[in-house]
Amino acid sequence: MKTRTCERCGEVLRPGEKTQQVFRDSVSAARPSATIHAECPHEAARWVAAREAVRRRRDVP
Image (cartoon, rainbow, N blue to C red; front, side, top):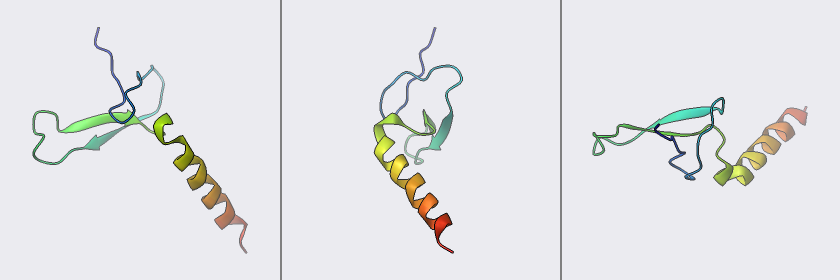
């Protein structure tokens, strides 16, 4: 059985986890896309900051 991993952080992608396909440049023709977490744990701090910025933007009249 093939195990899929996030190409950004290397963690195993579990069934039901949100993922996304990221297309590579034309040089990587053998593997034209990569599967990563939709919200990669490797970048958790960035996702928290982005959600906070959106929340603050909504609060401004």
